Length: 418
Ligand code: LLP
Image 1 (cartoon, rainbow, N blue to C red):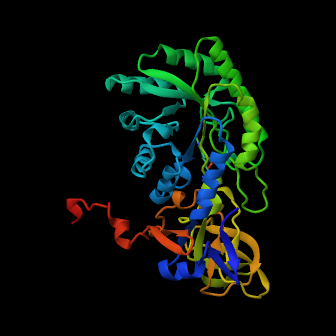
Image 2 (spheres, rainbow, N blue to C red):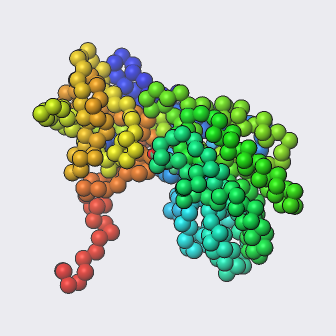
Image 3 (cartoon, protein in one colour):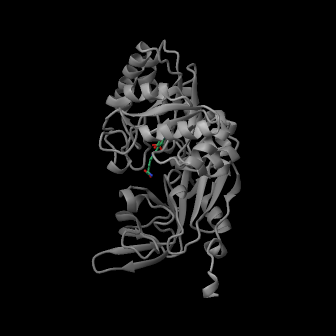
């Protein structure tokens, strides 16, 4: 459910015609709906209401400060994977005691930053990382709260690039080795065990893999309890899918229905780390058609947004609906919708049947709120897009469009070339 709808033939973001936003702020432009962001975040809060829980938004999905601030105000925490994400989360006002830190390659500096910030816990991904966190904490004369990220060896049936919890993946500690690593953690002087973490993948469209993973992790929790180790936090990761095309993914309520019966009577605080399911359908990418080009057996619709703005189609062959911002009665045509980047892989859609597009008109690339701007780059020296938040009839610039000066801001010419 989102708040991008046609009214009198014009696509609106809440109460604002998207055309007005494109004219005012230029394109390519990311547009987010405040009501949608709120509703999707609140859905997690409501679903797990009555059970101790923290909703830690996965910052990687969208790290805009205004969006993070909104979740902070709604009581949200953050799931982070870098020192940079810790910085932006704290700046946005997310309390450090609601921040969990995953990722296979934490550096000493990042670990120290997280320790100084007093985050809720490190989700540790390997033995050597565990030892490193202990070492850094010892140097800082403190103790690090840790959870082990367990790889439960579950296939969630999603795209291979975004499946994370199988044996062949770099993530987490194989569940068979978990007890051994918890034993090791108990022996180290500067870490203390507070939880367990698991994350099986992203864009998952059924509840059963989450339930399977939880059952495995609960068995581990029981084994640990039998050995005198009691855990406080159970972090079940993110991963709920969204509708890009015709998927019918479960919502947070369905997830809760699957998980809660297993958690009854357990003295745990549940952590969820949703990213895509909160922001994905709360954002669109608005682009302008530049040229229609006839190939020998294809029609190319060349638009002003490229793979540097939205890389998901190029990287995962991901499907995003593309709609005209202003509807008109017209025939259909089949296009490859491509960007201006000098790569054959620069496309937003291929072989897409859609209403005939005129040169210069605006189009909306739907479901672009997650892993859209956050994965964008300056490739081909293209300034990154602006971002706008719409609330009712009002709209707010939440990130300025980059300028040409921004492109060279960090370059330095050595003296011998001056
Ligand atoms: N927690 C951890 C530890 C994660 O690795 C991820 C995503 C999440 C939470 C959030 O998962 P979500 O609720 O968004 O599914 N760039 C890809 C998605 C990569 C997901 C990586 N991990 C895409 O555009 O589809």
